Image (cartoon, rainbow, N blue to C red; front, side):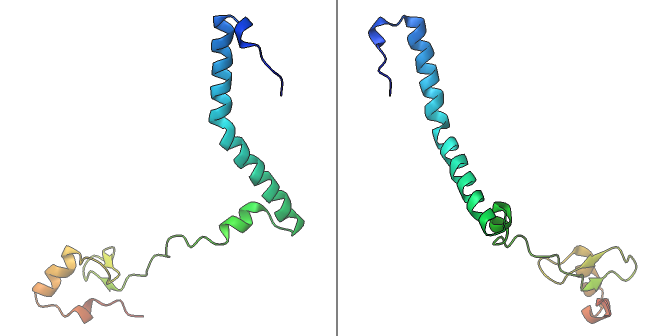
Length: 107
């Protein structure tokens, strides 16, 4: 590493140097992360994979949406999976005397 004689530098040069040093410090981890990712990607390619294939393979993600189990008798666009909070149309139908089995979507 080169020795820098700070005592011979002007105030403007010192401030400029400080800005450059701060920027280098701030981006140090990012640069190291990119180097590590490039090394990991090169190693993955040796085995015939891309790094994104390896990283994405372990993700579970959101569960697939459940199919509806119940359907409104007059408005087929209103459905419910039978899980979670009961929709108001379902509550109203049951309170009116409709058997929940009558609202089931036939398989």
